[in-house]
Image (cartoon, rainbow, N blue to C red; front, side, top):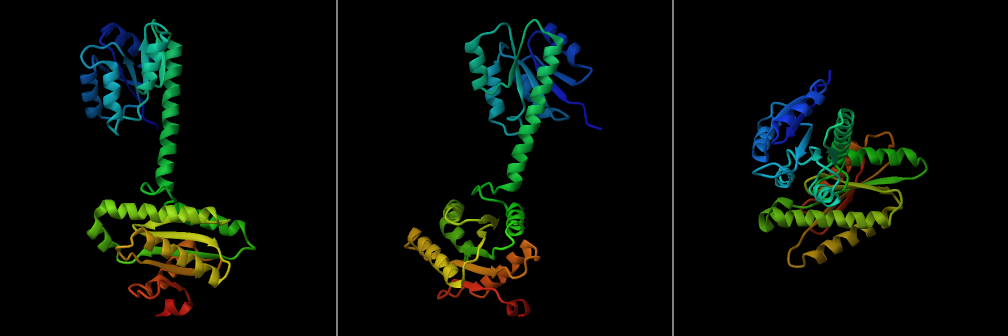
Length: 301
């Protein structure tokens, strides 16, 4: 059973709060505040999530706009939809309210059905917005904006299934001894390097048809791409290595590639990644060579 939604009503008029409570109490749990300071305390101490706020802009002390500004600065409350109470249609005031994050308006005197409909609509919209945000967080790496590991694996599987006549390869790349780079340049420098790698992979994908890519872990990325022969793949790798060297001419950053040519199309993408990792492991620390192609002997060794 879904919990009853909670609405915070902020108005210095006890009569206005009472009217709104009477309109909404059968469908919602109502909590009340007289001003912005009290409302912020209630948000922080609320026993259950506040699903929407009905706000009178003209409240004493911390006014409505200041209250909304405080909400925007706190990630816990920034996505709660706010309905503004208005005395009359005032375009300048409505524009200012929208610029400060208001979702809708309700004019006084209150029409009970209009209040209920607008409240129901903003809560529904906020839930859709939250689902989209959660979906984005699940599917995309927050630092680089490329696919997360699970999304990359599923997209690669879809690509493989949709192109039965194409041969593919799984390229796994990472930076040899990345922890040393983080120690030397700090986390900011390490993140900058990770973003550069993601940009390089994006640029590569723009020139390649039927390609997926994503961040697998820390400095580890994957590219699932059509395979056009060993020489072509080696050329692509060498170009990427040269670009990385040009980025940091005073510090030797070593990209390491492991390549699995897809011979078993029924193999899970995660296992293709594992095989590419086995190939990469054979050249870790070997500064004369930075790529290796998987063969079954690696699995047995």
